[in-house]
Length: 313
Image 1 (cartoon, one colour):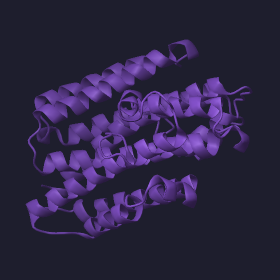
Image 2 (cartoon, rainbow, N blue to C red):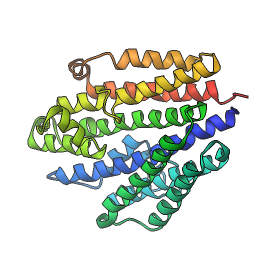
Image 3 (cartoon, rainbow, N blue to C red):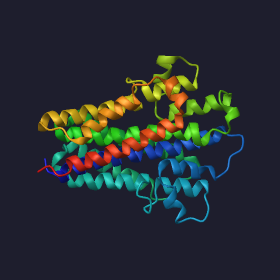
Image 4 (cartoon, rainbow, N blue to C red):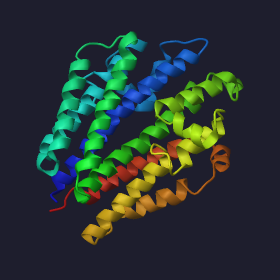
């Protein structure tokens, strides 16, 4: 496989996942804000900081407002991580690797781009926001579904999966950090009804509420929810599930090419360092600190994967 093909697949699926995850982050901020007794537009700065898009916003806006923040995250062309920019980048990468994709995957990606571009052609008002986010999630899921159902399980598929799960792991860590470190009203709210509602909102935002109830029942508990979203290998958006898939697909590439790179040792270290603890140890260390360490490790891993694989000839 040519390096540019591997790189295009990696970033096509990473951008696609980012588009969905940014929309989920907007949804999380919106829902959590509804549980606050007092709310201010300035809270959206924290949302944007967690998404990694605050600096770009502040360079172009004098103040933070909810409407402007949501617009920046969903549709601004000046924001390379907005939903619209990410979908556009995914489609552009899909065009570059067109011959590596099945017809069904290309059609699904193209349809996703056209529908999202049409929906985000104008600012999304608060009343229409839930429907817009649902549409984004449905179309990105369609691309993933056609990939799962039609693609040969070879190096093409492996690079697609690595990009998807690297972005997904990054996202779940950010969403958990939004809840625990940024958006919790005060230390006094820990364990309160407001706290529990916010934790349940996190479950909804990653489509994990039904799975959580199957495992833990109807009672929302912050420790159980954190355990479920970080350490449950059965939950497809948990950190453990995502990181294990990155390692699996990197191992498949090593087997296919008969060569291991620094990124393979790096992902093994990541698993040992972060996935071998129980939830009590994580809370004792500090959930925010733990999540920030994971985010740094994932960023380093993504950079190393690009270095190791983009020059295949």
